[in-house]
Structures are given as structure tokens and as C-alpha cells.
Length: 249
Length: 249
DNA sequence: GTATCGGCTGACGCCGCGTCAACCGCAAGG
DNA sequence: CCTTGCGGTTGACGCGGCGTCAGCCGATAC
Image 1 (cartoon, helix red, strand yellow):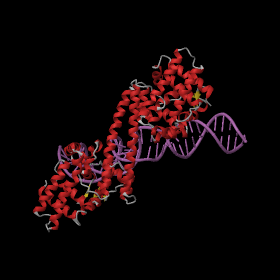
Image 2 (tube, chains in turn brown, cyan, red, blue; image 1 turned 180 degrees about the vertical axis):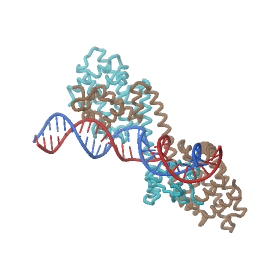
Image 3 (cartoon, chains in turn green, purple, orange, red; image 1 turned 90 degrees about the horizontal axis):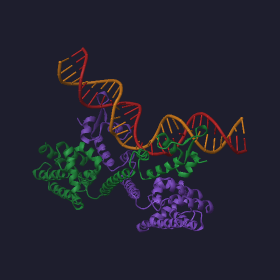
Image 4 (cartoon, chains in turn yellow, green, brown, blue; image 1 turned 30 degrees about the vertical axis):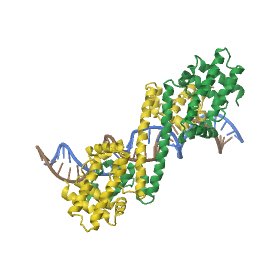
């Protein structure tokens, strides 16, 4: 015989019987014919087609794309080139993601405070869409461009800038200044500008108070900011609230 | 009020209403209560929880993992570290995949012949399982190790080795030798050893004849092998068939 | 006869929602 | 008063590539 049953094909190629039936169901690989009792029988052309299917599948192509290629409706080289581009894009995405995850781990372990601008650091295309609705279109577009243009040195400088502002505020606090006092508010203005620069837009009153709330209510933020000094998170929040109410639209 | 409707939360956070309902349905984030007409109402704790959810989601964590973390049943740092490891593994996989795809494109463009040992080159963990059933356990394990240990120089040398064998066989063919002649069979023995080395196991009769069939029946293989000389693919196949019948178990 | 093997055909499940469809409550405008 | 429209609700299907049942059939071995 030059036909084979499902079990034989399974041993020859390593695919499961379920997969063969699936390929039949979606029209990717039909058996040559049916034997007794509706049993599938595969001939040599089917085996060869299966080999090519498996080859392309190992390269990560989707089954419908493979079908198009095998039907001749799609140029194989062209499809592979496009696929390679997709892989490259995915690699970039993963690289950024890995960096962001690593950053987060460092911050959790008690490194530098988790400043809100890191929310932008790992933004990829998909989340740009999300963030765009969240903070507004222009904000994200420009923040994205800003982060893209930053050198690693500049990125590493971010926590330091916040550290300076935080230290100044804490100094005023220990000196007895209330959150609403003019010198404090002046430093908060710096803070606001700093956030604005990294968000690359002016946080409005709502956004800024929301951020302030996060500082005290989110345990992660509160912990890192309270490390500046006991009660600093609450102080910072009060100062930001006051600033938002008086200065922001 | 310190509660917000769905629409408000949508504007604040950028998630869709559908997503909020989904999170409710899977028990990840329930609204604080229901207002008039069953409308969802979210309070400040829910918003904060949502912020944390979105933060972790941006890092690529699965929703059930996020739920476990927020319930306190899973250590966040630990989960992130494991996640980072998964990302790294996926990056490796993609890197190998990209290399394999690039190889395939080169071969399609008429580069060096597509030798069967390249079937192993891009093997990752998932496909090792597939290949293990296909060619047997030990075969794959050792082939894998072999490819891992190869330097890029060695890898680039693979096509050259096959080229030498092919050239020798073609020389015998143009000299008038039949595929079953002893000198031809001697060179085929080299070919078999070469394949065996790259598969890191002796191809049996069935496997070797299957490979031979591929050389003539798969247009891609036939084309590249016929480039050695017109009709060479058929000649090589006949010689391999004869070898398999006489020498292989 | 019956137990077993090998095959078959549905159908559900995975994951994270997008996208209908069908319905309800409330306010503004005719 | 009715209509229209907005903003919300609850299902349910779909996506990709099968794994994994459940339930049935035909041929073979004991």
C-alpha cells in the first residue's frame, strides 16, 4: 500500500491524531480518502504536504497563512519576511518589558522610590493606546517621544531628580513648615514641573490630586515615600493637594 | 460623592466598561455596591486596587496571578522574578526562531541547500517534545546537545560538508556509475554518517528512505539538490534507497 | 460472547477581553 | 403623553490551536 492510517502518520510525523483531524476540519490537510468505517487514509502527497505544514509551523506561521502559502495564493519568501519582522517587533516589546519588570523588582526590593514617570518607561504600542485614553492623546505621544530620546544615563537620573525634590520638601517639613506654606508650595511647583516633564504635559487638578492620593493610599508608594522620612508620604500628599486646589485648573 | 460610575472610571483609568465587568465576573475587582438600576459604583479602594491591577497587567502578568498577589496569597517580588524568567525564556525562544526564519529565507532565495540537519537548528523546548516523538527520544536529546555546543563557525561548516559529499556523488554519477555501485554506496555511507552525526543517531531504514523520498518529492529539496546537477536529486534518492535496503536495519 | 483496540464525531476548555444583541431607566424635547 | 437618545445592564459568541473528555462503531483476539 502507499496509503497510511492515522496511527501510522502519527508515528511517522509525531503529530497527534487530534491535530490531523483538526487540519482536516479547517481544510488545511484532507486525507486522500476514507477506508472502511470512515477511517482516514493518507497518501504520499498528503504526507509531503504535512511535512511542509510542520516545517512552516515550526517557524511560527499561523495555520491560515500556511494554507495560503500551500495553495499558492501567498508568496512564501514574502510571508516569511513579514513574519520575521513581526518576530523582531515582538523581541523589542519583550526587551522593553523585561527592563520594566526588572525595574519594578528593584523598586520592590527597596531601591529608589517608584516614581510615577516609570509608568511610561515600558510603554509599547498596545499600551500607548490604553495610556492615551488614560491621560490624553498629546500627553502620551510626547511622553513617548521623550522617553525614546532619553539616553540610559538620563533615565537613571530620573530617581535622583525626585530624590532632590523630596529631600528639599522633607527639610522644610522637619523645619516646621505646614504643607500649605509658601516655601513648601514653591518646591511642590518643582515637583509638579518634574512630573509634567516626564509626563510631558501639565497634570491638571484631578490628575495631580489622584497622584497625591496614590502616594498615601497605595502601600507600595507610601512605603517608598515614607522611607524619605516618617510621615513624609502624608505630608507630600497634603502639599500636593493644596497646590492642586490653589494653582491647577 | 466618593463613588464613581462605570463611565467615570473609564475616563479616569482608560479601561473599557467591558473590562470592568469582566474583572467583576472573574472576581478580580468587584464594585463597591450597586446604585439605582443595578449600576455599578466604584469607591476609592476599588480605584486603588484597579491601579495596582493595571500596573501589574502592564508587566505582562496573568489576571489570576494578579488576583493571587492582591489577595496576599502570592509574594509579589517572587511572582515578578518568576515572570522575568519566563520573559527571558521567551526571548531566547524568539531569538532562535528569528535565526531559523532568517536561515530559511536565505535558503529560499537560493543560498546553500537546505540540508535536513537544519531541522534541528532552531529546536526549542516545545518542539523538542514534538521531535522526540518523531525521531525518538535519545536522538533529539543528543542532537540538541550537539547543536548547543556548536560554535557559529561549525554551524556554517555544515552546508560545506554536505556540498563535498554531494559533489563526490555527482562526480561518480557523471562518470557513469549506477546508484547501487560499490563506490557510490561508499560515498552514501559517508552521507549517512553525516546525517547521523547531525541527527546524532543512526537513521534507520525507514527514516533514511523517508529522507530520500523527501529529496525528490519536496519541490524545495529537489530544486536545491538538482542545482548540484540535473537529475541529481533522483540519483541521490536511488542511491540512498539502495543503501537503506542493503545496509540499514 | 465479550473485551480490547483503533478509529470516528461532536463538544467544551483555555485567556482576555471585543463585539454584537436585547433590554431597562431616566431625562430632554416634541 | 410619547419619542428619542444616552448610559447602563446581562448574556452569548468569537478569536487560535489544539488537548481532552464522552459516546459510539467496526474489526479482531480470546
